[in-house]
Length: 359
Image 1: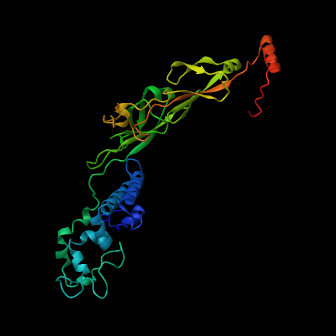
Image 2 (image 1 turned 120 degrees about the horizontal axis):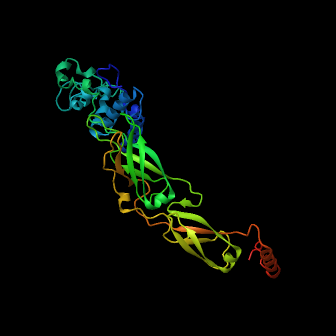
C-alpha cells in the first residue's frame, strides 16, 4: 500500500513487518524473509500480493539501514521529506538558527516527538517557504513505489528416491509451477543423501523483477519406505533370519545390502534373537565431493526442461559412511519333519536352559 500515485497512507513499517520498535536487525530480517516468501508475486497469485510485497520490501530497506531507520524513528512517515541536517533544527530551542538555537523545540518539546512513526511536527517552522525547503525532494514520495531490483523468491519442494538410489545417486525430472506456466528441471541427486536433507539448486527458484537475481530452489529428500530396511541417519538396519541351530552353533549367513551387493555375515555361537551384528561402512555412503558444493548452475529451460545438480544444504556435507546392522531373528521350521521334532524333544529333555530365568 505504497503512498504516491495511489493516494493511500503508508503503513507503519514496524507494524507492517510485525516487529516491535526495539527489534534488532536479525529479527527484522527474519520477519521480512517470512513475509516476503508469503507475498512474493511468484508464489502468491492474489492481486494485492504484489503491492503488499513492495510495501514489505520498502519497510525492510528502511529499517535494515541504521541511519535511515533512525530518521524514520525520528520523523515518522514524512522522514523522506525532511532534508538532511534537519535534526539540528528539530533539537534546537526556539529563537534562532545558531548552534543550540532554532525552531522546532523549546518549552513545547522536541519537534517530531509527538509519536514515533506518527509524523513530523512542523509547528516550529512558521514563516518558512516549505516549497523552497523541500523542493529538492518533492518527487521522491511519488517514486517510493519503486524500490529497485526485487530478488526472486526461494522455493521449496520434496523429492522422493529409493534407498538404493541414495547409495548410488539418482536423477529426477521434476515439474514446478511458475509465472509463465509449468517448467521442468532435471535434478542430479548425489549419492549419500539422507532422509530430510535439503538440496540447494542455486538460481532455480522464482524469477527476479527489475533486474533482481533469481531465487534458489530447495529440494527436501524423502527416502521411500523399504520393506527390508530401516534407515536411521546414515545407519541402515535389517533382519537376519537364522535357524535355531545356526544361532546356537554359529554360522556364516548371506545377506543382501541396500546397494544390491551380497555379503557374508559371521554369526557367532550362542546368538540370541535381537542381537545386532554390525557391518562397518555398509550403511549410507559418505557424501560425495560435490555434495557440499553449489552445483545448481545450469539454468532450467521452460517447457523443454533443463538440468541442475543439487548440493547438500541441510544434512551437512561432511561425515563418514554409516553402518549396516543385521538383527538376528531366530526362526523355527513352520512344519517340522518327524525327525526334526524328535531332535527338538531330545534337546528339551537334556537341556537345562530356561530363557525366562535371569542368569
